[in-house]
Length: 293
Picture 1 (cartoon, rainbow, N blue to C red):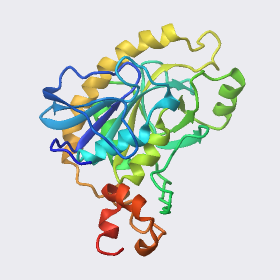
Picture 2: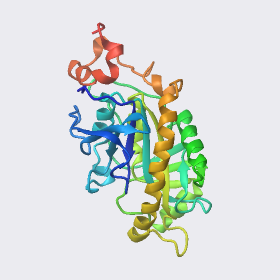
Picture 3: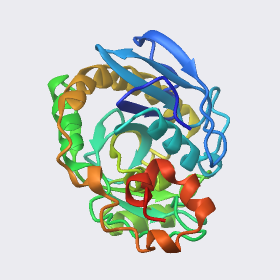
């Protein structure tokens, strides 16, 4: 369902980032999607002179577990508003000594260790296999890293985000295993966000805010009190980063692979597609199916 409101940049807020007070000309939009309700109303406003759509993924008041977030609805809602580029802000644990609490990480790769989350818009009579070798938009991620360093924030560019199921934090054995795997940070929300954003042909990159050392470092085990204290400082810096990077992201031409992710990815011929599903997915696949069924 398309609305009259429009924004080309979308921001998904994580733990602690439930509002952006520097947004101007704010209005709230309730978007209905074929996949149910998103995490809440979407806030549209100007940030540094650019129209943005802001959605806290855990809902107002942080009421949704990572596995309860209706990510398909969230991504679809942003897409229906005209969003082409998504910046995700997420709290993470560090799996490397040098990535300390209050540091920012702009990850390059993802390992999916979730269980049973719906990670595709397709199925029910339409098959698509979308390339996902580079899960984060490299060009947009480079802008994030550049803007973050320009603000004097300690920023690590690259590395692998491991997405766990949650909501419990890691066991010590898991944390040690993830370090042996070479992962850099651990969180609970990048999957299926990154996968669905790619299927929706949206650029997706993440500003990961380190809150803790997971549980692998003696004396630094993760706890809610520690996470909350660090989040307050991190969120203020995250908003500064958004204010700096969004104008640059808005100006960036889309020459990346994200913008054409569905080209050649849909295996089902239009004449063989389930009509009900094709109608439901019109927002994503319409240019491939119009006049061909």
